[in-house]
Image (cartoon, rainbow, N blue to C red; front, side):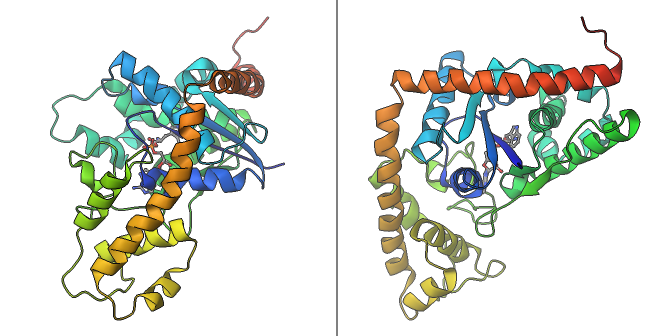
Length: 327
Ligand code: TYM
């Protein structure tokens, strides 16, 4: 049976980029293979966090996992820091990787740009991510395309380890969606939609009110020729809106182009507000039911138990290959 592993950081509100690039795939894969999904709280402390907020955000993401359709009967859902093997394997991988390859990670370069010194955790971040994936023998990693380079590094490290010590790790593959592997910011469609951008109208969060969704879409940057056509290079703004429309409505982009032929951007935006709000209403209803329920903690505890069982087996294998004494 094949297995997929992925994770989301509990930093702020999850946005539709996270949903389209990652969460939607998580849900679809549940019916195709074994699936293990984590809330990666240890990754989020690579930048300063307010402890109270971190706790709340971690449970928020867990509740959102369930609200978008993850089923604890089908998927293992757990919090990264509750399974110690993640940090344990991360150290071992740190000893099998090089500062040169870590320096080439574009996310590290972006986050440390213009800083004289960056937190060491930001630099070793991809190794904790590699540990997450390799612990579960995952063949597939469903993520947005901003994570592709990290998966490449995970593959390199897994192959290097296997070559040195014999078959130990499954070498995983990036799994991106056909439509929407990179959703762009609404205010500037040359940047990716991000949780940390200053302008809150640059993104739509899954828990946004209908009014906030409306404002964000109506303000979205488009070009001035008013022709509704998918052309990422020359019309990135309208192409981004078409992608979002397609994902939330289930319509093909070509059919949406046809539907709006001769109409202006205003009409498309107005309808898109409705399409997005209709989907978010369902997610938010479920979220409000589950977020404060005892069921949520129960699911996370059960997830932790299952994750421990799988990850401990991997650690036994790794330690034995390395010659670390066990008794
Ligand atoms: P994070 O928390 O930044 O993002 C969660 C997921 O959302 C995807 N994503 C996007 N997809 C499309 N368009 C966008 N604008 C967009 N923004 C974000 C991300 O690609 C990701 O899939 N390092 C990871 C978390 C992680 C992880 C892992 C993922 C830690 N360990 C192991 C997979 C496997 C991250 O920061 O994702």
